[in-house]
Image (cartoon, rainbow, N blue to C red; front, side, top):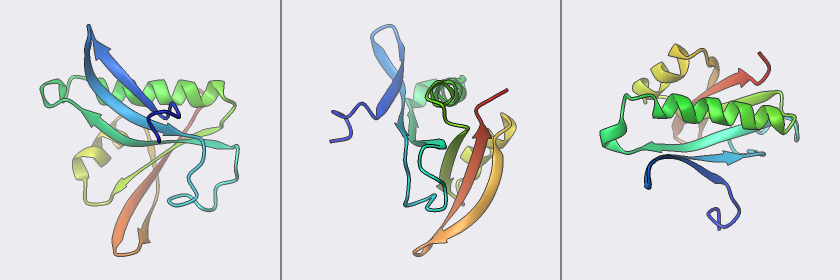
Length: 118
């Protein structure tokens, strides 16, 4: 169902998909305290292996930030399994702030946020 609702956005090189992410306007599971209508959420980032470390992840992040801003959202929020140090480093290296680490069930998640205004 997510595919037909326009939740996935991607990056292309020519006619080849090189990266994809899920962009949502609500996320009560990972961010239950966030007021509706204030934030956008980026999930499920994937980049083709041969495009890894070439800026695709960062471009998709900035695209999500601009899209969130245009939709009137003050924050873009992201989360990942807390043990994914490579992904966490990518977020932190481009200026995304760690909000906090939370435990949901048996797993710890690192939650990040980025103001959409410059």
